[in-house]
Length: 335
Image (tube, rainbow, N blue to C red; front, side, top):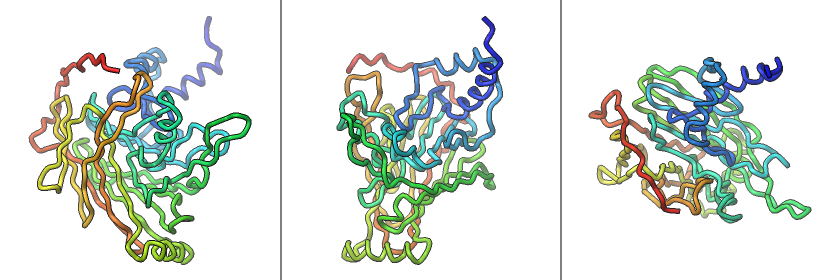
C-alpha cells in the first residue's frame, strides 16, 4: 500500500533530523536515555527513505551539531524536559560527544536503566556526562520519587535559560551556549564554546563560570563564605569510549588518546588546574553489566566572579589526513 501524504511528509521531516543526530560512525547520539541503535539500522532506514537532504549544521530537536572532515560533534543545547516528561531526562545540558570516523572518542556514560535503579540514577547525573559539574551538584537535580508506586524521579531545579548561537570561526565552526542551572545555588552561569576546525582535525573548547549580575554575585559570595573562601570546586569531565587507549603524557600536561583506527589525538589544557585520568563506566543496553573505561578530569576552584578553563583536542601531526579504517572490532563475548 502506498503511504499517505501525511506519512510521506513525516518522513521528509524525520530524515534530515536523524542525519543531524547521526554521528560519523552511523550511530545516534546518546542523550537522555537514548542509545546509538543497532549497527547499520539508522543508515538502512535513511537509505530506504530516499531522502538525501540534511539540515545545515545547527540546532535540531534541541541538539547542536558540528561536523567537518571525519569528525562529528553533537551537544545537548536546550533545557532538559520538565515534569512528567523528565522521568527519563538527564542533567546533561551543554554536554557533548565526539566521534572520529568509525570510532567514538568522547561520550556520555549513557542510560543505566538496564542495570538497576542505582545505575539509572547515576547515569542521569551531570558527572556521568562530558561537561562541567560544580561543587558536586548536577545542573538539574533529581526530585523525590513519584507517587502511585512510580519510582522514577523527575528533574527539578533544572536550567530554564539555555541561550545558544552557531557561527563560523576564522578556521572552522563555532558553538556557543550557556545555562543557568547553577545560578540559584552558586550564582554562576556555565558558558561553553566549542570550535571545530574545517578539516575536522582539531577542536578548541572554553568553559566559563561567571556571575552575571548583582544578585548572582551576592549568591556567589554566600557560597564562598560557606566554603571559608577556599573557592567553589568544579570538575570538567571528558568520558572516553572503552576502546580508546588513554595515557597521561608530557609530564601531566596532556593526555594521548589512541583509537583502534590508528589515529592519535592529544588532549591539552591551559591554566592552573589539575588534570587526572580516572575510572569511568560505559553503559550499554545490550550488555549484562557496565563496561569499565576512563575519563579525563580537569579539577579546580572558582575563586572570583569569572573563571575560564581552556582545553583542546587535536590529532597528532603525524596522523594521516584520511585513514582506511579496516581494523575489525574483536568479537567480545564477555558480559
